[in-house]
Length: 603
Image (cartoon, rainbow, N blue to C red; front, side):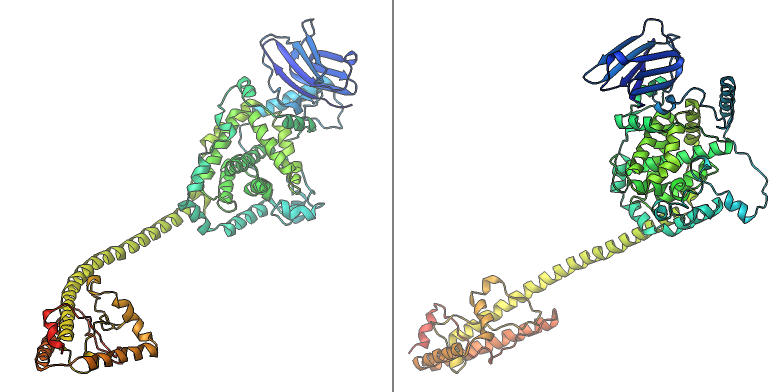
C-alpha cells in the first residue's frame, strides 16, 4: 500500500483532512472514524492516523473529490465543539499506530490497557523533569569497559557506525577514532583544536573592519517576524512547504528510550545544532551555499566532535569559540545574534523548531558525506520534537533567554587583543599626523623665505642681464665673438644643472631658452655657421675711438654689477655664480635695440 500525501487543518467545529489520491475511482473510497482513529482506503492508497483529539461520525461529515487535482477533502465533526487539536502539523507522529507512543520494549506482549498506562507513566516522568542532572560518585573502570561504553548520536544511542565508514570519517567529523575515544578525550581534543585554529589577525581584522558584519547583523531571518504565541497562533504562523511535508511523511515513526540524563543531553545538543543553523542562515542571508553543510557541522560541537554537553553554559561557550575560530566571519556580535535567534525559535514553538531541523536535514541530504549526520542526529530530532510537549519547549526557551555569554568566558583573551590593537592604532595615527603638521609648517616658512630670496635674486639677475645687454650693444669687448649682429637673436648663457639659483621670470627670457637647451648638442655644421656669421660681422663693422671708450665704461658697469650679484649670492642663500662656458657657446650674439647711439658704431 502507498501512503498518500495528506494535510490537516481545523476550525472550531470540524477537522478538515485533505488527501491527494490521483488516478483512483470515486466508488472505491472507504472511511473509518472512531474516536482518535481515522482510516482511509482508496486502492492503492491507505492512510491510518492517530489524532490528538476525538472525532465522531454523526451524519454531519462532508466529503468532496476534485478529479482534476486528485484531491479528496473530508470534513469530520469534532466530538467536543470548540476543542483545539494540538500538533496537526506534526505529520510523522500522526502516522504512528495507536499504542506505539509508549516506550515499551518490542519483545513484551502488553495489552492496550498496559500500553496506555506505560505511556501515562512516561508523560508523568517528563512532566516531573526539572533539568537537574543527577550526580554519581566516580568509580574506577577498566579501559575495556570504557571503550565498550563509547556511544554517540541522538541520546547517545548509537555506536559502531564509523567503524563501517572509515572513508567518509574525515569528511564528516574531526575525530580520528570515535569508537575508542571517551567523552573526556573528545572534549580535550576539541579544545586543543579550537586553540590552535584561533587566529588573532583574522579576529582583529573583522573587529575593526566590520562593514560586512554590520550588514549581516541587520539581516532579518524568516522567524524574526514571528512572536511568542499560543499553539493555535503558532500553527497559523508557521507553514510547511510541500517538500517539507513530503519529508515528514517519509520519516519512520520511532520510540526513544531516554532516561533523564539522556533527555537533558538531547535538549542541549538541540540548542547546539540550532545555534549553528542560525549563524549559517545569517551569514548567507538566508541563501544556502555549497559551504553551508561544512559551516553547520563545523560550528556544532555535537556534529563535529560528537560532544555530549552537561550544562547550557558549556554549549554557549563551545559555540562562541568555534564561531571565532573557523568560519569566514568571526565576530562576537554574530555569536550574540545567533543566541537571540535560537531563543526566538524556541519561544515560537516546536513547529518553528521542526521547520529549522527540516532545513538542516535538507542541507545535509544534498551533501554527499554529511548525510551520515542525518542518520545520527537530525532525523531522530525531527521525529522526537514532534512528540515533545509545547510547554517543554517554552520552558527551555526561558532558560536560554536567561543565559548570558561574555568574551572572557571563551578564554581566548579577546579583550586583551582588542585593547592592544586599539593602542597600536592610536599610536600609529599620532605618529602619522605629527610629521605632516611639522612638514606643513616648515614648508610654509621655506616658501615665504624662498619667495623673498627669489624676488631679490630675480631683481639682481635682471640688472645683470641688462648690464650684459648694454655692454654687448655698446661695444662688447674685442674679437668677433663679442660683436653684435642684426640677423642673430640673443643667446643667454646656459645654467648649470647643479646650481640652485632660481631661474629668471618668463618675461625676461625670450624664446632663446629653447636654443640654449639645444646648444650643447648642436652639430659641427651649426657651429661653423655661427663662426662664419661672426667673421662677416667683423669685416663690415669698424670700431671707432668713441665706441671703445663707451665699451670700457660698459665693462666697468658690468663688473660692478657682477660683484654685487656675487656678494648678494654669498650673503643670502647657498647660490653660486653662473660661469661662462665659451667652449659650449663659442659666440654670443645679441639682438641690438633701436637706440639712437647705434649710429656711432656704424662707419
